[in-house]
Image (cartoon, rainbow, N blue to C red; front, side, top):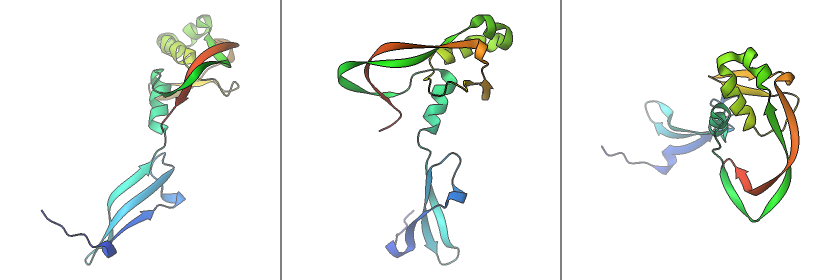
Length: 147
């Protein structure tokens, strides 16, 4: 199959905010002009930023970040969640082990609303199911979603 592309019959069109793809921050279409159909989308391009990666990290508890290493390690203050299995176990039963792992691996920024995603469902964790501890930690670099 051979198709000749004329620059005047090819364009990129940016989507408006009201027509963005699922979780996208920006979308573009590559469009071709046809005498019969007018402008027709041939390729859709969506910038979903780090949504997919963040979802995998949150649901699996697995560290999937890229690491930009520092020249010298740094000591930083961090907040960590310490799960209370005495409260988690009876409340979440067979999901308690997975929730424990997710809590232990969570980056704590918002200490008022702690939630995790298990089996595609977001679960709000009651305050009696964990405690927040602040400690110093040696870090070798900065964790990044993408570069």
